Image (cartoon, rainbow, N blue to C red; front, side, top):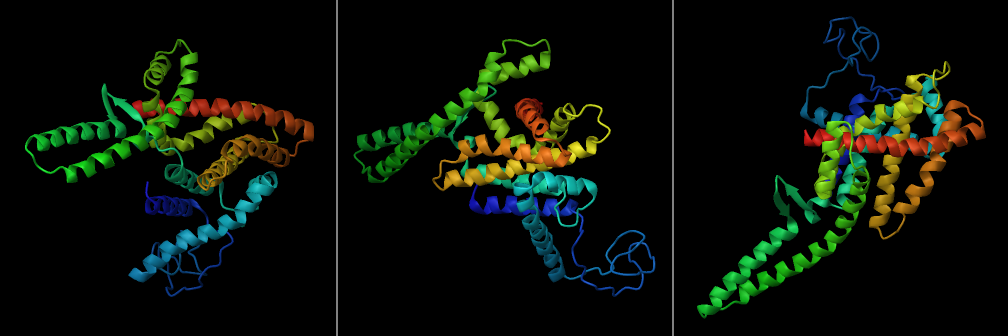
Length: 353
């Protein structure tokens, strides 16, 4: 992914988030040129129609269209800069305030989730491990890989060079092509080593499970064991499309920590989970950028920061004691791995289907 594409992904995420983000706490422009709503003909009182909610002032110029585009990105961004410090430093209080109705200052969980998903996948694709170029992927028994493609081209170039030598023709031009192709192969071989390591680790859980009573799961595990690189490639390509599945999967596990509670319902758990997922995705984005800048912070950061954040959020969002928050934090860390496993299996199953 190029830098322009990455910027486009982030902007798209901001616009998608803005589309579902309510305009609480934002100043209206005050224009009410029409006396009746153009949508439902209700007499207007104020900047919005009290019957259908449409803005009283409707733009009809191309300049206004692009103004709305920039407004959608940057007004959402304005709320982000008020939300992110609270999400990082006092996540529990922010979650509880949003649940209790104090929402004007914060980006809604759904909007922030959309923005975080687009940002994370844009950053990871741009600066993380790109399996599309370095992986040796098998599709329907046919291997397609950057490394093998370059090797085939190199063999063809060498064959052409041999013909030129037989004909007594100069080989300077083709020698340059051969040298460039050999350099590309060297780079791809170096890139292939971390891909092999990641693929082996990803296949380990599937290899540990010898069989399953459920045919669909058994077939899925077999495919992962047989071709872990293809599984990784599918995850990289399709995970963002199904990222929303993390919310219901995680809510199920959180409910188990407060079973049949009258104080906290599924809505509380959903807001908690969504904000927590947002923080984890944003954290991964920041740490990936740090790694790209030469700072070896990814593994350390993802190992230390999430437990502390979960503890602070669960304690203050649910009003728990230190002991109650600690054991629930430990349980959530276990649940997180289980939820992630279910999510990855779901993505692989949906990708294969």
